[in-house]
Amino acid sequence: MATTYNNLYLDIRQQLRQSGVEAATLEARELVCFGVGKSRAELQRDGGLYASPELERQVRELVERRLAGEPVAYLIGEWEFYGLPLDLSNDVLIPRPDTEVLAEQAIEYCGEIGECRVLDLCAGSGCIGLAIGAQVPLARVTLGEISDAALKICRQNIRRNGLSGRVVPLRMDAMEKPDKSLGEFQCVVCNPPYIPRGDIDSLDSSVKDYEPRLALDGGEDGLDFYRSISERWRDCLTPGGRLYFEVGIGQADEVLRIMRGQGFGDLQIVKDLHEIPRVVFGTLCAEI
Ligand code: GLN
Image 1 (cartoon, rainbow, N blue to C red):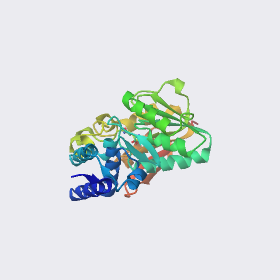
Image 2: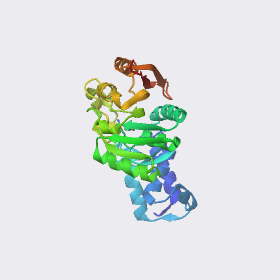
Image 3: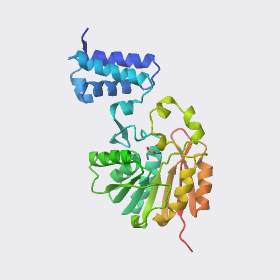
Image 4: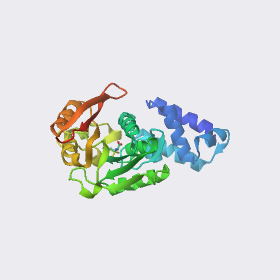
């Protein structure tokens, strides 16, 4: 039987709710909009019109995949971070609200220093660097990524947000020493892969089966990237420049120790929205 857009939406919302999806309202709207190719405003406007069986089938297929565990962000190929619409693919992590804490801290700092160069290492979708670029008009941002597929997403997101003039993508490997020609940055931000390798298989299916392993695997104890970046990348900070890390649950103290051991001072830990220590940052002490 033919159904109107609005009834289709209500039906999907009900189905998601019954399956225990927490954000059923938001997810139903995203899936229906994407499945029928309408914006939110168009869906509202056309709510009373009948959806073609073909469109309905497309929506129901998306819902099946969602209920099988695939995250909505990947199904619709985009997500919002710090108010920016971002393209996504399975080659990059879905930007998390927790990561906005890191972006917020770095934005505050960069806003204070004015003209500055910022490096977002392990950029993924580019979410952190793009948020800084969008919020700090005097910042020039480099998005560093090892994965070509992720760099492609970075490029799309730079263009999508009109930041081509001040944000550039560049291939780089956080586990190697940077090329001298990179120059110096006042601020380096990084949300590296930080899951201990042995823990990956016990993660939620929505993460371990859909998100890129490369973006999760932090080595044996999950701290490989913190060690490498604090040591190998410190020289691309100007003396007095800052390094900001996002950390996994229970990693803050260890990361703070790693940074201290590499000559960072004024170290601070910032909690996320759930009161979990989530960001560690410090200042590279000037050589005496
Ligand atoms: N910087 C990206 C993010 O915060 C990707 C992080 C990663 O790949 N570990 O989502």
